[in-house]
Image 1 (cartoon, one colour):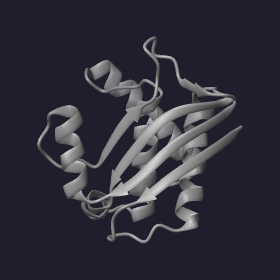
Image 2 (spheres, helix red, strand yellow; image 1 turned 180 degrees about the vertical axis):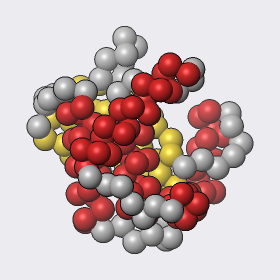
Image 3 (cartoon, rainbow, N blue to C red; image 1 turned 90 degrees about the vertical axis):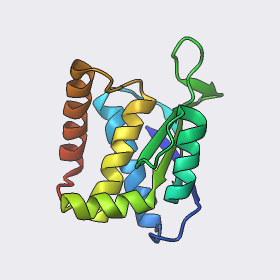
Length: 155
């Protein structure tokens, strides 16, 4: 399995390192493996401010508030993963680093753990998971736990 992470850092709250990007890649791979998918994949990850994610949330979801992460799947009209030649384009993940800091503090997690949990959560959205009703939410939470356990990230 090959996963390319394209990233864009448009914030100044967290220093995004090569190690962070490698850990994000491992998280996406863990999500794909949990879903028993194989192949070549590409995911875009953007690190933004609360102000920018609020604007995106307002623009694309009609919700005028900050959020921790937004997911933009690149699937076709049939819900299939978009293809670019041999590469499956999963979509875009947008992370608010201010929310990562805030939530890590609130939940007593490391910044890394919070960031990677949000990447796992968002990747599952890119793969078609949602949490609009209790059954979907329960299934998605179970997958998130499996992925975090696979990654051995608990703090």
